[in-house]
Image (tube, rainbow, N blue to C red; front, side, top):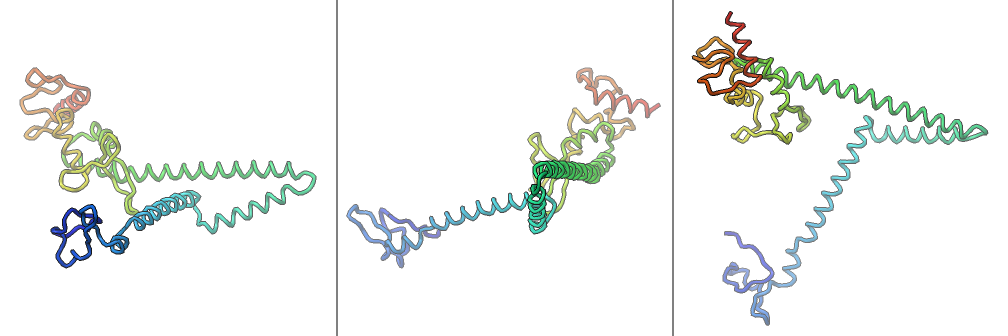
Length: 251
């Protein structure tokens, strides 16, 4: 076992023999580590510096996020600000300076607001397209593979999947009620197919899948579509819809 250095000990028996001379017995009867050695081993200053560096990195990250939101490099933004300041100063010159200044200010604010609105619209459109590609396509494929009803299951799957950015890549993650990614019990993240498989085993969604050994749409073998298997289970809306679709296909 590695020896853990301590500034004061009741006994030096636990200290490796070659280091025991670094401890001296004091008036209290305890053994104190040599002051110079203790000072050199003190990491308080390093911990403080590390914490300060972490805070600085956080501030820099927030600043970078603010620059990125503008959609331009810092040099471009600084140049634009310089040009705007010069224009504002010129606008305030002369007899109608105040009026020109207010008009220029209003035009700038309006232009900025419109630019942000257009950018938000484009971003939302891109997110919608990305979500459709990453989530809807994969979910539809998984539901079809497991012989489920996309009409009944797709909305529920989409509600429990979120597109996140990780390491510069956008990934589809199955999330829990708090919006946190779910694990699959194997050390990884749950896939959409694993989530659909979970739904197939859930009695509340089982009827949205074709039952094995039956051509119906999720109706258990020996059961009646739209009925109450065994006379004990009360069907919910999803089960009734699935049973109705199954009955229509069997006609």
